[in-house]
Length: 463
Ligand SMILES: O=P(O)(O)OC[C@H]1O[C@H](O[C@H]2O[C@H](CO)[C@@H](O)[C@H](O)[C@H]2O)[C@H](O)[C@@H](O)[C@@H]1O
Ligand SMILES: O=c1ccn([C@@H]2O[C@H](COP(=O)(O)OP(=O)(O)O)[C@@H](O)[C@H]2O)c(=O)[nH]1
View 1 (cartoon, rainbow, N blue to C red):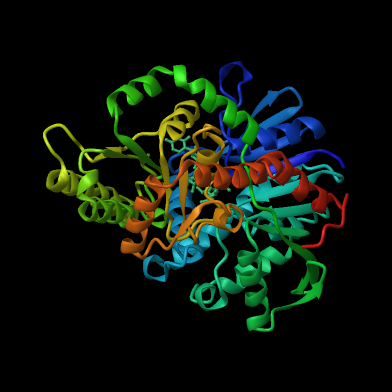
View 2: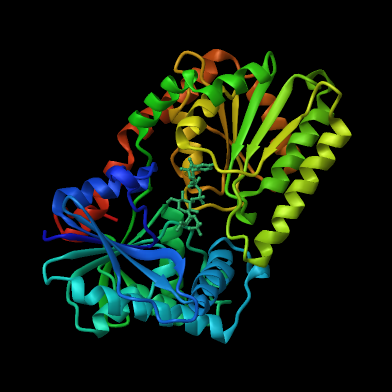
């Protein structure tokens, strides 16, 4: 294969000194880029006001070029906050009630994709392989094809793909489906997402399944496959072991004392089920008076997409809820919920996961959920904690050793918390080992390789 070109809305630009930002995806894709040489292109995260953005800013690190573009205020509003995060995000997370359709935002989304294509096309050589990531950039391949590019182009969706009845409530679903048909490989996180996608093709006679993971639609043939994203399991387990000496982790351990720690780590997003989770924790404490003063629930929740009204409302709601529960249940020497609104470094997170007897990962819907995988990788093999995992997270298709919960069933989740806290060591170890073995084999490097093998035709993996 020629060079690899990655395109994603956000680009993990290396910090000073060439150090890649922490994060499995950044690490795995950087390794693939280094191997083949290549370009990682995307939005700089900055606005150029109302002026047309200048030429791409290019930063070269070894044989990788990071190419970044600013967007205008209008672009950011219509493409990112508007269509990507107020239409595609809620629809793909089954929240029809939260989708806000505006003609301006839809037009802005397609316009920014055309703009990305115009910026990218001059950099592409005929044998380059292009890998596009996530819902912000679905129409990119169609735009590149329109400009005459014949390269292999793959697409990976990090979030869920909904069933036809949900997708078709979106006015431009036809353009979105047509956009996907211009890729050579369309990758999803789970078999459920792929089934939903096939169902969407069938429903309106848009396309057919040809067998062996191949689909035909809109006069094109492409592969649809599942590629569950992993983490850098072995490295993460190492950070967690070493993190015992980290100052923040040590102070947390001291402040928790004899209490059992329960941890939740999520962007402040309505898809993560944070309010239902706090309800479940409250229900658990009320139903188990012996646990009063003996459990601390640490919820780390960095703010996210705060310019989008639904996210802003959520920030107020969760803060009020945590305050109410602490006020109602706490004692002078016990705060039941420690609610943190800041982002923590992954080394610290790794240490905190390891201190926690229970990892609460209860999204209402999630493409994968890497926190679930990180929690498992961080555990002490001799005394592992228990993962409580929503059946609606992509990770639930793989992590058979977790206690699966329905996050909408608050009482059921409260009972599961009690079960996790009293689980015998033998059962904890068996469950953990099953999950860890899987995560070691299916790590992020394997995910990257599997996708690129299919995209470049190096293997003929069945879908
Ligand atoms: O870029 P933001 O708008 O600040 O949002 C952060 C990222 O959120 C989403 O993450 C998803 O990808 C994870 C890795 O595959 C997956 O585990 C998780 O379930 C998804 O929600 C989004 O898809 C990314 O594009 C965003 O950058
Ligand atoms: O304070 C924080 C909270 C989260 N994360 C990281 O953010 C990612 C969240 O990924 P996930 O798939 O769970 O959810 P997403 O936010 O992508 O929807 C994980 O790697 C976390 O370790 C982090 O570095 N600091």
